[in-house]
Amino acid sequence: MIMSTERIEYLDALRAFALILGVMFHAGLSFMPVFIGWAVMDINTSPAISIFSLVSHSFRMPLFFLVAGFFTCMSWQKYGVKALMTSRAVRLGVPFIAGWFLLRPLLVSGWVMGGASMRGEADIPESLWQGLKSLSELPAGMFTGTHLWFLYYLILFTAIAVLVITLLDRAPAISQFLAVAGRRFLAWLCGSRLGLVLRCVLVACCLWWMEHWGLDTPDKSLWPHIPLLLIYGGFFLIGWGLFQHQSLLADFMLFSWFRLAWLGICVTGAIYLSAFEMYPGHEFYLYFKAGFVVCYASMMWLLVAALMSACKQLFSQPSATIRYLSVRAYWLYLIHLPLVVWLQVAFAEIELHWLIKLISITVITLAIAFVLFEVMVKKTGLKYVLSGASKPLVNKPIA
Image: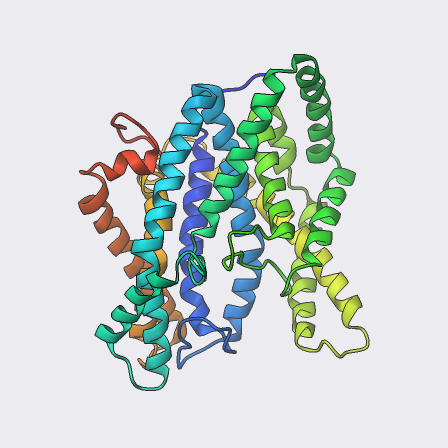
């Protein structure tokens, strides 16, 4: 078993791409053709956004957790358990707690202002005041309307990993057995068609218990959403295993004509069947739902593998652009949602094509986030918090 602790450039590129896609995903929610409870509904909408959201949401968060598992295992192998705990406590815990008090009021005020703007009554000072008043609701509802749940789940997975590592260190015989058995099972899971089928079936079973068709957003409570915990935990675990057995990366990313055809069928099937979520009284509703979760689960695994394969082909060599985006990726994740919501409210009543608005909101969000990084992070102590490091990092991507 050979484990290289050198960074893999294409995984940094993959994470940067997924972050930018996430900005576009959130920016697009105001252009949905039906009101979904988002902060604001734009006067210009498009069914194309529904398809984009359905497809992109199927793999974006699973991809993040797989990459997080890979880099968390790398940190453990490189620095040890104690350093891993310290790094993650700083890098995940501090932004998680600070986000309650800094990001949540901005998001709540955006929601308030969005609702008021649709009634023609937008009031920025009042919206900001309502956002600040929302702090009195903590800890109840502290996730509501925020994206901080991702950090919470990473904290949970890291804590579980540390606990398992600690227990296995005290039982070397069991540890050795699990290492051998785990490697064989992971090889089968990643390298065979039956392994892929099993992965899809297990995820489909979890998807069946979602409140909505697709992946729910666990932003309502500190109590984990069990089906999502299993799905995202599975991706985190496979990412962890792929770091330990990097020779299996090629098998996991293998993308044949057979898998391409499978992906095409599943994407088409998921898009078509998703329309039946609105008809729970239909006599074949459960059959449609079963077909959807199978298509969605297959789409999830196949798109993750396809994007990893594409990034490996395109970004295997060091790139200044990828390094630039990678260093700023975590900051972009933290700050982008309040920016997106406020910009959506600002653009909502402007008579422009929805695609022009979507691109504008995305580009402006990225520009503001990168400028704020230069001002608030790069030259301050925040860069050590976001990297989890105790000493300066010289243009080093955040793991």
